[in-house]
Every structure is written in structure tokens, then in C-alpha cells.
Length: 365
Image (cartoon, rainbow, N blue to C red; front, top):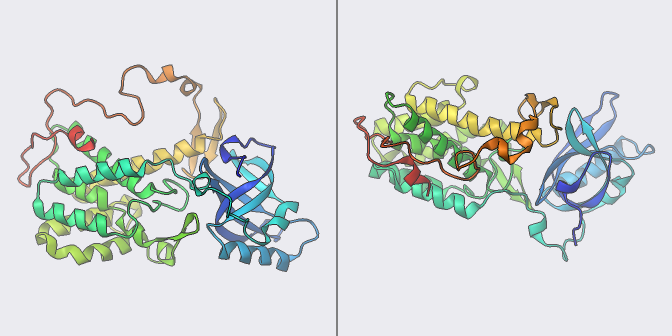
């Protein structure tokens, strides 16, 4: 039975518990000594882990343990070491405890629910995504999005990334839903900017669809396939969506592909050129970046600033956020709530640019 969880691990504390091991790589330290880098996880979170081995081990010994771990990614192992902060990030260092990593732990008496890392209510996310799809007014586009999402391999279960943001079970559907909600809130907030609501929803929900072809289930985790780095999820997404090109007219399909192709903005091959593509790009950045910053801040003390490896920027944990009162009263700051519609503000556009009477908040229920 598992009794120690990642959420309870403190810096400098001894660690000896069972965790899922994945993202296993063999690296060299500054003194050219080989070590194993991996991620360990349970239902409460994930931590980086470096396996150095004991002083008497040689390169081939380390490589032997690496081969075992890499072939058993997603399995449960006993991790015995010590927690430490490195550049503001909490992690685990394993030295003598490497002797426990020769084979996976006996999981016959363990509960999978203690080890599956996901803060996502997948069923609730799925319900909201399907409701958003149903709200698409263009019947052909609605059929395309519904087919693409429901027939994709693992859209509602797979992660959105290896580790920087939404890197857990259900991360892809959570991120896609967040991007759709954020893009629609942009559309609702800009009264004089005309956006095609149907294309906005379609592009937001499908912008990362290629990630369904980028991960495979391994044990109690997901591992990145070669496609993740060799092709990238944008290319695989474009290839996947090509099977649906006859579902709608040529112009609508071309603009949908443009949103997918350009959602990385200045970091992609193609810059956004339509308002919908820009909105999805910005919404994607908001969802990803704020999750990265939030994760980076979890190991930062109030009043401290560190460089976060996920956000690749300095992050500051304000002492003000330690109190719920800092978020004010009412529902505007509560996580998981939907802000009320503003007056009679209409949201959405038909293909002629006319506003529909449907509020975006109706689509989130």
C-alpha cells in the first residue's frame, strides 16, 4: 500500500516510496559522469528525479539501470533518495537507492488510482467539449469537428505535452477546452472585431489534434512517440485532418487548416493571418503559459523570484496570493466558475459576420 505521496515531499527530506517512472533519458554531468534523468509521479503530482548511483559504480552499471528503466517506462518503481531544491525546482536525487531499480515493483497489491497523475475531471471536460461542438451553427463544420475529435486516438485521455504544461492524463482535452473558452471570451470582449464563432471553436478544439498521434499508453503513463519530435504535432495534425477535407467547403477547410498550421505564431512556419487564427494563437499561449507559471510557482516561497524551467522565465510568488481574500468575493475569481454574460452582449458570428444571439456561457455548461 502506498503511504508517501509527492505532495507531502519537502526539501532535504528522505524519500522512500513507490512512484511511476517515465521520461527516462541517459545524460552526462559536467564532469562527464553518466546519470539517469527521469520523472516520477503519483496521483498527487510529478517531480524530476536524477539517478546518480553509488560511488563504486561505473558507466556500464549506470547504463544497465537505464536500459531497465527505459524499457519499463510507465511502470512502478521503488524510489529511495533525498529531495532537494535545484534552481528553485524540487526534485529527487538517488544514490545508493539505485539498487532498487533493477526491476519494477510488485504492483499486484497496489491500486492504480494512487499512481495515475491527473487533476482533470475528464468526464466533465468531455461533456463541455461535446456541448461546444453541438453549438457550431455550420452543420458541415460541426460534423467535421465532431468526427475528428471523437475518432481521434485518445483525445480525451492523452496529455498535451511531455511535461511543460498539461502533461498528464486528460491534459489534451483540458487544454483544448481552455483554448476554446479563452478564444470565445476574446470574441465576446471585442465588440468591434468580427470573428467567425464556428471557425473559432473548430480551430481551438482541433489546434493540437496531432498530439493524439504523438503519445502512446505505457503502463500507468503516456510516452512520446518518435512523431512527437521528428514531425511535430502540427504536421501530424494537418495529416490527420486531411481525411476530413470533403466534409465542408474548400474555403472553410482552408481557413481551419490555417488556424492549426499557424497556432504557434512567430515560433511556427506560418504566421496567423485571420482574426480567428490570431485569437486561437493567443488563447493557446494563455492556457499553456499560465499553467507553466503556476507549476513553476509551486516550489517557490512567497516573496521569492526564481527562473522557472517550464515557463523559461523568471516567476515571482506574491505573498498576496496566500490568502483567499486576495481574490476578492463573488464568482469572478473562483477557479472553475464561468463569469456571467455582460449585459446583452452577443457572442458569435455567422459566416456573413452577423452576430448570433447565443451567449458563450451557454456553450460552457
